[in-house]
Image (cartoon, rainbow, N blue to C red; front, side, top):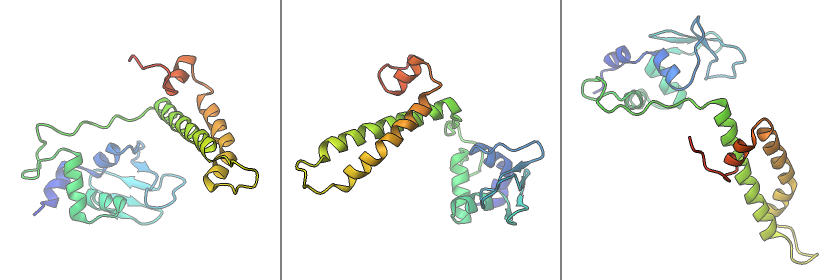
Length: 180
């Protein structure tokens, strides 16, 4: 059986929220993940969270359970796994999982551009393969979709690569290898 109290003493709501990428303001506020929050309305401290917008309230286990739509037991197990806690005594294990590196905006833009470049390539292949052979052939839905959207995808790629150096663009397109 899981000792919830002992687990809550090891991992705070603040610890968990920060570990998944929430930047908590100096006064402990974040945008609530449980409703469409335009401005920060959730207060997070060490032991509890409370949203002044939707009324969500609880401890770290409740936060994880509500965030992922899982039971309290599954939430506790997830917290133990993500923080590398030993299930027997909740002390940190010798081999905690590696800390998740927060992706920089530039990395995100490069990864997104690489995704759209791959999508554009797939669309071009689709257009070539599914092009009607005869003038009276019916259009394949994927062909029509690709023809209709390839210009939009190309525009997105241009926008994402607009502020990149030539080497970065070639790296994103997979034409040169990253040496660092």
